[in-house]
Length: 150
Image 1 (cartoon, rainbow, N blue to C red):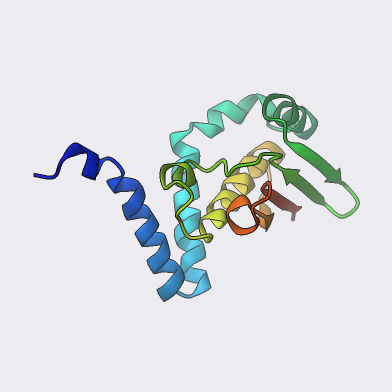
Image 2 (image 1 turned 180 degrees about the vertical axis):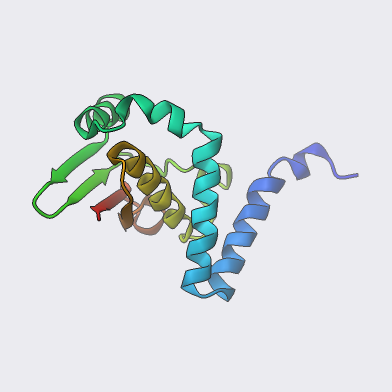
């Protein structure tokens, strides 16, 4: 039987190995599909549909909330149908990154982009896309996403 200390980070290390395997052995479309599924799981576990209910149809209220509660920096470009979201943090906000102490594949950042797209899709009541423009894991700087309103 393994000691508790040896098993303490088992789940995080297992996930890190899986992500590395995906990165090294799977084409981009397979990686994206897997990370989108993970983002959907995280979104569901956090009960985001319920938490976002009061902001459905209220983009300004939602972005005001994100800026006020989390310190995010948000720019809305209505002309080009783009929203730039800067997490404005000096660390990665992803719980998997925290659990692995940052020792995880940078493809994990795409999961966060899918999570962001799910949040903004719910608020805007239409499908949106999201791209990672910058991330703490990849660049050592605050995560920035570009939300594309389709």
